[in-house]
Structure formats: C-alpha cells, structure tokens
Length: 111
Image 1: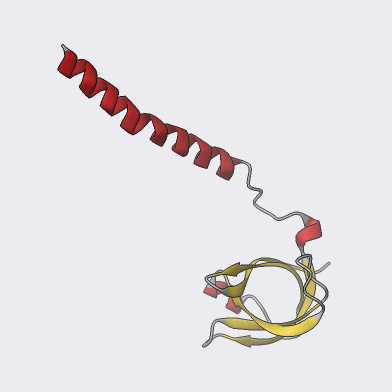
Image 2: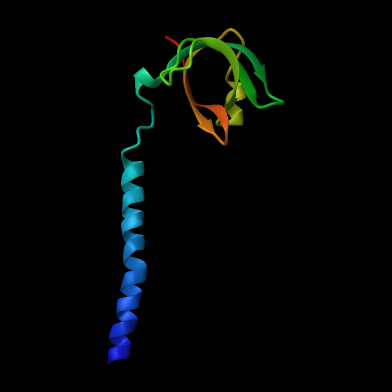
C-alpha cells in the first residue's frame, strides 16, 4: 500500500506542474491580439525589396522603441511578404528583434 501511495504521489508531483504550465501558456496565447495596437505601428515607405536576401529597405519615421527616423533594411517574418511589398509603397509596420535581427512581424498598407 505504501508503494502505491508513493507512486501516486510521485506521478502527481511530476505531472501537476505541467498542467499549470500548459494552462499558463494557453492563457498567454489567448490574450495575444492578432493585430498589434495601432500605437505600436510605425509609418514607412518601401525603398527596396531584396528577395534574395529576404530583406526590405524602409524609410521609416520614429519607432515606439525609441529608434529615430531613418532608412534601413529589415528581415521579414514571412518570405511570401516580399511578393506583396513594392518599392514606393507606404505601409505601417511593427518590427521586433528576432534571432538578433530587426524583423517585420506585421505590416498593413498605409491609409
């Protein structure tokens, strides 16, 4: 009987925290918006699309992160986006550091 109780206790202690982690992870994803807050978007104009490098060069205004206005190249979250972006196009975008490089994680045409 002691062996059964001990085994059940060990199983509970092993798997109970996993349920809590899974629940926490689920809650975090459930509250993440599909579209970023409009205040987090930066205005920009596409200057160059480099499909071979997987980058797009954007002349952009000041970013919410504190980066001043400048022209620079960004990676894109999805390579298929390079087919949708064209030189001269005005967009609003959100960029985050992904694997050490600033990466466009969302964009929309400017209105």
